[in-house]
Length: 471
Ligand code: URA
Image 1 (cartoon, rainbow, N blue to C red):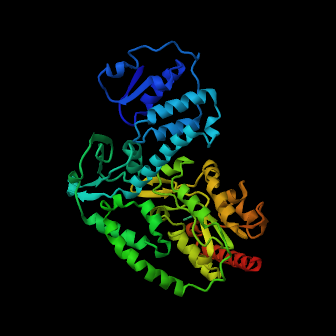
Image 2: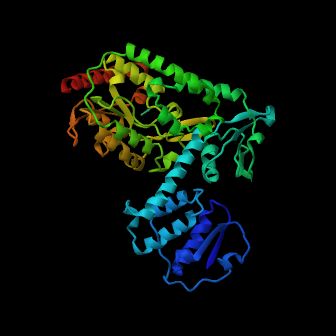
Image 3: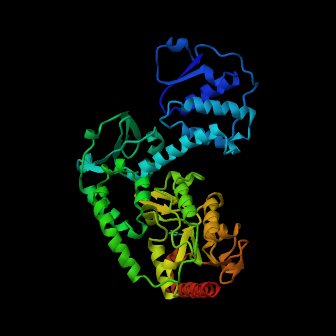
């Protein structure tokens, strides 16, 4: 029997080193006891890994495992389940004989480990979404303190996100297992804390409450979905949660008012795709297909009627979209709305999404400055876009700008040469390319900006007419 003592519950490197040696020595998963921290050496009569000496390696020169396994193991190991180390080791041993096992989504062991990883990803997302800082002290002693109770061992792995997001603040996040502190320059760790160690309400709450009430959209209220995204367990730490009962009570009234004032739409095409779209959106909320999820607050998925004849693709969410979780709500979105209105196109009857669903930015001081997604990020995110298109099957797809055009067509094109003409897409839909509204916002010359804006509106008008003709 071998006993492996890992230094911490999230000690992936320790697990990997031990697992590699054990697997190379051909040690059976049933012959290993995994533990966190030290325990009496004679427990189970086991030898501490490293001291005991392993049988000579069965595999000369080691063996390599695929990147997907490493990614999965790095995430799954953060789960609270005490079995996780053994499950991962068993999976590693099986991979040695079946290198393509990672592609077998029906394999029970892989499914079990995958479920652990999914729960961890959800928890990482919840921490990013639900940590709320309270202000304490003033002047030089000013800092922000938050209390959070994660389900899994995710605090260290999430620390980088909070450092990047709140780089210029001094803050502490207290959790039962460990606390992390950022002094504006370095991250440090301390012992676990209790809720009483964290302060209660303060002026930062007013800011959050105002923000939350402003983004609360009654038309999107689905109590079940809301509870699954924001389980009640987190409510007591969220200043805005106090608003929820009132907002929910007022939601039906506000929704009825929105419906009454909305333009009359033709009867909806019968569709069975709502469940598929809901499932896709839920899955995308935990997307880790490219590194952009690490710094963004949330996935910004498409929105709009599922039977919309018009399907707009933007580039990626910006700062405000990342905060609100909705596409095109910032300055580019305002220009887009105005241009659509002038072109006689009703945004409420269009589906609006982005080629890339996470905000890519560079932090400069307190500001998050937009960065154009690269070809790899666009390709990784086409996974979601193609499924949105498959579910909605729109008649007309409009790419706003070069990144969107790349996502729509699967290759890079020049906007000036492609815009203003119908393109037959493989799906049978008609594709159009035009400029991105941000391009218009960036034009320094007022006359040129006005001219380009008019051209954009005219293109939207033609596209709107095509949509009406094709319905
Ligand atoms: N720009 C985009 O391309 N999409 C948004 O959602 C916002 C700005």
